[in-house]
Image 1 (cartoon, one colour):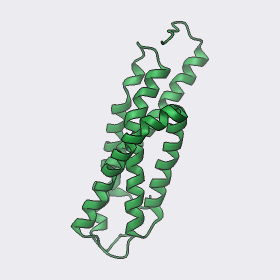
Image 2 (cartoon, helix red, strand yellow):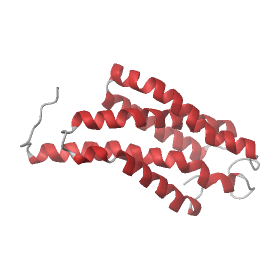
Image 3 (spheres, helix red, strand yellow):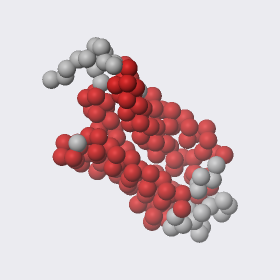
Image 4 (tube, helix red, strand yellow):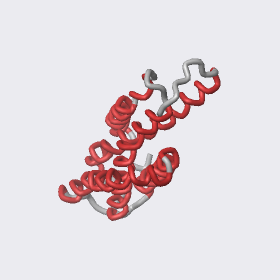
Length: 173
């Protein structure tokens, strides 16, 4: 049962909104994860500036994009159980770290199999974020707090960021 606090001190509100913002930054990275392969495909299909040894085939590009979905299935199936076991806040922290490691692997690896692994783990983060973020935000906010509905907005902003900035930066950035 939720206890409603209509007269929270100002500092508690600031901490609550900071927590919500931090959680929604994960939603933003989720949006970037969705669109990453779309914006890097032209580079990976060519010789320059391709961080891999050779251009990827259509089949390899398809697998690269698909590994996020495979990971998301795994993340969705395990995310709720893990968040019940370890707590939603803890699992979101661990998932944010895993997401950052996934992006770092994509930025610095020179092997296709590492790209596949990074995309799979990025997909695990997607599956966990999609299920756990709305639950966590609903648990820490009041029923009348509209900030809990920002998850989808941040995902779309991550998509937009990837499509707008992606063509102008290297894979390493």
